[in-house]
Length: 191
Image (cartoon, rainbow, N blue to C red):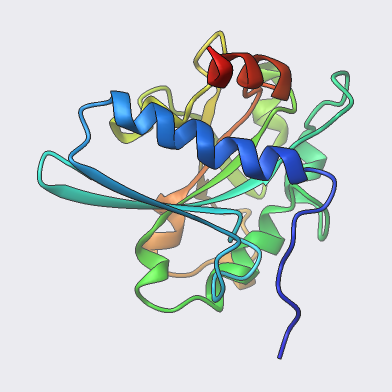
C-alpha cells in the first residue's frame, strides 16, 4: 500500500486554501459544495478536491497546490515542460492516466503563488498555453490581486505522443498562478 500523501513545506498553504475556498464558496451564488484535501486515489492531483453545485449543475475540480516561500521565484516555461518537478505538466499528465473514469471528468488546476511572465507564453512549446481569463466562469478560484492569471493548456503538434490522451485531459488543465500568499489570506480569514 502506498504511503498516505501528507503536506510538505506548503503544509500551511494546504490547510488555509481549503478553508479560504469554503468561506469564499459560501458567499458565491453556490447551491452546495464539498471540499476534501489529500484525497486517496487522486495520485499527485490530490491536494484539494472540490465539488460545486451552481445553477443545478455540478462541476468538480482537482487542485494541486504549489506554494513558493521565495517571492522572487518565477515559474518558467522550462518548469512546465520538465520531466520532473513541482510544475512538470508531464508528471501531472501521467498521474491523470491512473485516475478512475469518474475522477478524469474533473477540471484540474495547478494552483500556485509563483509568478509567471505572460511574455513567455510562446516559449512553452510542448503544449499550447492560452490565457484563459474566464476560466469557465469559475473565477472564485482566482485569488490573484490583478486577475488575468489563469492559463489553459492544449495539445499541439509538438506534444509528445505519450502525453496525448482523451479530449477530457486536453480541456481540463489550467494553471492559476500568482495567487494570494499566506499573509493576506490569514488577514482575510481573521476579519
